[in-house]
Structures are given as structure tokens and as C-alpha cells.
Image 1: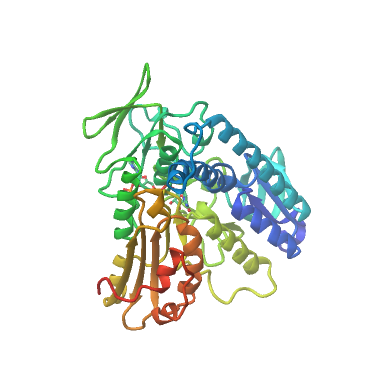
Image 2: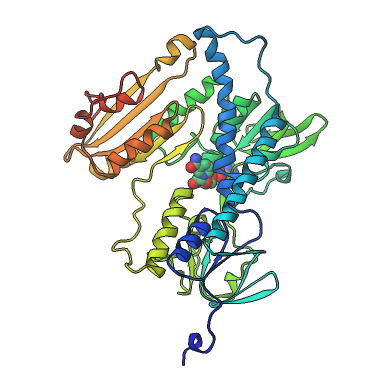
Length: 459
Ligand code: NDP
């Protein structure tokens, strides 16, 4: 008699972590007939809803008003007095909106008949989880605990905040410094610069956004500098000290900058502390992420993992796709025929202006295909002929010369995320440059450049 026959399990699926991936897996599995519980010790909706995508986008909107006020004058608008930004209004309105979303998540779980348990879960063995003093016997455990910001160790590093705290600063930082060159660093540099802070970004490498298309990175660098962000590359923080007026940040270049807040955006690590996986046979990658197979099972078959904790692309839509794939694999009537595809995932960096991208960079395409055609458009958007803004827009298509397939599309410009989301369908579908050319543009838009670029910029 198997262990399962002896003791009927309390749950078919026990999800640890009510973030994007965990909640989607719980609801979808419950809809497929599974008995599901979710344990969460912090907030419903995880990083994305509480300290990530959602509040970040709201703050990014707030920061964009800065340009909008300046642009308005050329169109005939005059403001009675210079606009003033009030940080507590933004912060507190954000708190209200997140609370509304938390409640929606609770209702979604409740409506799906998923039991929500408040507390940090501990995995006792492959079929038992303890949370809030109760032990649950479970068929499968899903680890969807996400990541947690990581700060390198240097003198005064405890004076820096992370993306967990930066949204709720008590006082608006008139002088702001961000350390790092990834998504979070670049986005927050733009946000605080737009909100009116005197903003510095310090990055250890020669150019931020490693892994993105080189031309896109250079264009974004120039645009951010144009908007007033002080970008310092090949530099790191030596130490931070508290001084009378704020924080004194000494850089490896020898310079010292005095600021009101330092954001360390130096990456995120899997949030496995206290979960008990280290006492089981769950194998980890070099980065400390649970290793998973195509069905998202770890080396302990009843323990599954999805989302940021697994070290794949740390993006909400990826966690959602993984959740649905996992449910089809483990609880569905027809398991998926192929593993989840991770290529051609579109993404946006919400810096100002935005970067939107899908598919290969020029560098990757050249390495993979050898012969490529690159089409670029670098122009001043129509809006800025009257606004007086010096903001420019870059659009770029990368085409495999042999097949004519568009293998990469990139944009730096207003609403690049919105534009690239549409282009991503074409790139994902493997359409050719001829298909792009056969598409009639929408005039006058910036996006029409994607279907009107005819002459390769280089081969
Ligand atoms: P990233 O991993 O993207 O970037 C971390 C940055 O910190 C890198 O520039 C890295 O430098 C630098 N760094 C690492 N260690 C050190 C150190 N010891 N000293 C100085 N600098 C260091 O992490 P983020 O925190 O920006 O974001 C985490 C993830 O969240 C992203 O990868 C992304 O997937 C996701 N995210 C997505 C967003 C979106 O979709 N718009 C928005 C925000 C986050 P180096 O490049 O040299 O390694």
C-alpha cells in the first residue's frame, strides 16, 4: 500500500507564495478540479503588485508629467504657476490602489475555492508543509516564493534602500542616487529624475543594460543624459556615510556625492530563507535557484517551482505562462505537447523614454545568422516639433538575410512597450520583412516607421 493510500492528502496542490505565478497556478489548478491551498506571509499579489511592476508604472506615469508640463507650452498652454510635485499624494494614492488590488486577489482566490493561509510555510518533507502551526499533508507543493533584493556588502550599505522600500520613503529625496545598471536602476533613475530629484546613476560596467542591443543602450544613455540624469559608468560605491545633510556616497572614482537617498538595485536572489528546502534533496543551480525540468518539477518530484525563484526571465507574464503550463502538465486532461517556449519574449524597460524589445539583439543575430540586414530609424517625433523637447526616437528591425525573417525589433521612445507588444506578435509568428513592408502604416504615428523602413542601414 502506498503512503498516499494510507493517508488521504489534505490538498492536491499546496502553493507557497501568493505572487503572480502562485495565484495563477492556484486558481487554474482549482478550476481543473484540484483541492488547493496557498500560504502567504506578506502581501497578496507578490512583488509585481506590491513593490514592482504596478507601483513602478504608477510612479513612472507621475514622472512623465514633468515632460508633459514642459511640452505643453509650445502647444499654447500656459500654466498659471510652475507645477509643484507632492510626494505624499503620490505615495498615499499608490497605497490605496495597491490595497484595492490586494483585496481583488483575495476575492479571486476565495471565488476559486482556494484556501488562503496567512504565514510563512516550511516544507517538512516531500508531502508535508507546516504553516501557522498547522501541518498539511499534500500531494504536490509549488514553490512560488519569488525573489528578494540583494545588496552587496560595503561600508554603509545598510544605509541604502531597496526597491522594497523606495516607494514608501517618508520624505521625497531631492537628491537621489541609484546603484546598478539593470531594469530597476534605470527605471528608478528616470522616475526620480522626472519627479524632480537631482539624480545620479552609478554602474560598475562601461554601459548599463547589459544584454540589451548595444545601439539601444547607447541611445537610451544619450536620452537619459539629455533629460538630466547624471550617469556614471565604470564606477562603484566605495562607502556610504550619514552626514548632517543626508548621505555622503564615496565612489571608487574618489568623488563624494551628497544625496538624500541611495537605492541599491543590484539584483535579486531567490527568496528561499526558512523554507526548509535545504534540508531536502532539492537541487539548486549555481545561482541558488531550485533546478526544474520541463514540467517545473524539482529534483524532488512532488515539489514544483515557478517564477522568479527558478532564475528564468524575472517577468510577471513569464510566471503566469509557467503557472498555466504547470497546471496543464500536472492537473490537465491534455498535457502540453511541447515545453514552454522562452524565445521572443517581449519586454520593456520603463525608463524615459521607454525601451521596448523583442527577439534578438543585433549582436546576437549577427552571431547566430552571420548575414543580417539592420534597418534603423532615428527621428524627432512629430510632437516634439512644437514642444521644443530634444527627445528622439529609435526604431530598429533586424532581419535574417537568408530567410528574410524579422528576428529582432527594438524601440526607444514614447510608449515603446505599447508599440512593441503589437510588433511582438509578428516577430513571434516568424513574419518576414516582406510582410512588414506589405503592411500599410497608420499615419501620423511613430510606430508606422516599423512598416516603412525600406533601405537597410547596414548589412
Ligand atoms: P538586474 O539583475 O537586472 O541588474 C542588477 C544590476 O546590478 C546589474 O547592472 C549588475 O551589474 C549590478 N550589480 C550586481 N552586483 C553588483 C555589485 N556587487 N556591485 C555593483 N553592481 C552590481 O537586477 P534588477 O535588480 O535591476 O532587477 C531584477 C529583475 O527584475 C530584472 O532582471 C528583471 O527581470 C526584473 N524587472 C523587470 C522589469 C520590467 O519588466 N520592466 C522592471 C524591474 C525589474 P552587471 O550588469 O555588471 O552584472
